[in-house]
Length: 247
Image (cartoon, rainbow, N blue to C red; front, side):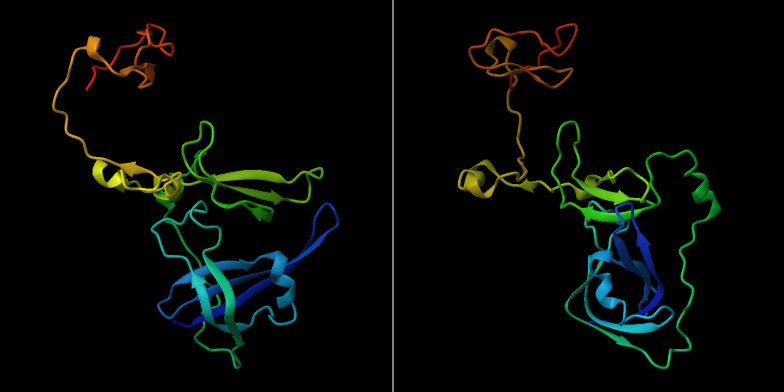
């Protein structure tokens, strides 16, 4: 496993509205290929590091967990990109390496920054103390994407922390499993809850609407009727909709 070097850039203590005190640590991790990760030790566990990590010091980290890289990291994919595990070893490097970079940054071209003016889609940062992150939640209601609910507080709200929601893009959605009808018949339904499947079909005949087994609306793609039903207009479309032919 590759070794990482970490620079403890800041240690801080804050008091929130209920007078609770939190101690946190910010750090920068650098690998041997000039890769950089900016991180923070969550306040819930940072206290145990208070007497072990000193601001401005350099440490070697062995045995750790890093989530698989993507072109764009999304909180909906995983809340922690870098994690300590039970076998993690952090060693203070003395003397401090002379070639260790004390300044690390990520810069965007000015033209890229101009594109963000007035944008309500991208949130570059959240100011406040993150106190909880939920597991990945399935789509609910009108939402069609998985999401995580993040609770933060800035110490100024009346006993009610802010709650924000981070949604993933299509990359975070569950992939459909391609299979066949014959193979699908042998699948145990108890093991496929919330699992998405994809089938390839070949249209061999289009029959008249009078022979429809199930009618659907061509405009809103919702159902119009089932076998034996007399409904022939779409209740969701003002003009009655347009039925699909039966396949």
